[in-house]
Length: 376
Image (cartoon, rainbow, N blue to C red):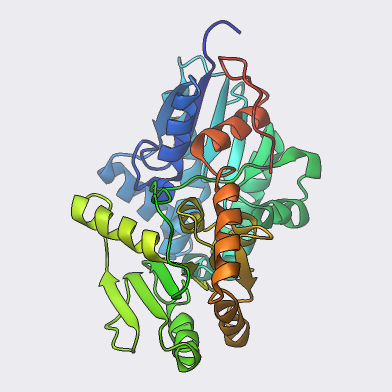
């Protein structure tokens, strides 16, 4: 192959925007560019008037607006747009994010998932509101996309296992690639004060991220450790509990908020987010890179990110197990040891490493000939 490989990241929404797929696509593009790949952002968003007309027509058959995005008509139009917008790029490979479309024949591609539809149906309100016929149609389309893909990549083993068990994708065609951080929160110089337990929660979706359960467990912990504190960032309600400090929504776009967030990570001794379901858990990577252990849950990707030594995972809703994990991480030596292990593990989850694994799944090489990162 002469020159750098031409690789496209294809999504509904601008892949170069941090708002698309929670920052996943812009992270992949950055990782590919860092490797010297000629990466193209391919947006399959239609003009608003066409989009609304198409969705209205697609929903007319079942009279269910939640069916529209996965209706055969919608997918055919998006697939035609994919053919148009990839034409002439000379692609050696593509990363398909989402399954509401098909890429043209002749373009080698991999799919990327952080959660499959079968998994989402039990936890995501949009999927719960779709008709059975629409779900079945979408599933048939997805199975066809999976069968044509060079490989089916997944952010975690949780999603990868669903590809194998629920969709019959051969294990050797499933590649676990991980994800990277949205924000670089590096460990601060100097020794962290591990003696006083300082828990940190960051999450916009207060209910799904397990905020109420964390508050309950923390109030019980305070009976034993009145010196413990909990800092809460995100979409939380008014907080008046002893030892709890609410910071509201902090934006990475504002320098003052970035400094505040960096300070919270620098002082914390444990990150805790007991989500009901967490498709991957990018914030656990950010905590690990800052040198602190995490408490996450077993449903989703946090088990992969946290690993065996970088913290503790508990079942969602198990307040007793959550309290025991918080007690464990009140111990300074345990928290310090797990924080060091978490920082080491965070090196696996960078966007260049993710890009290398995606290249491996596409059977492509880096322009500089480097040995690509192994699949997770």
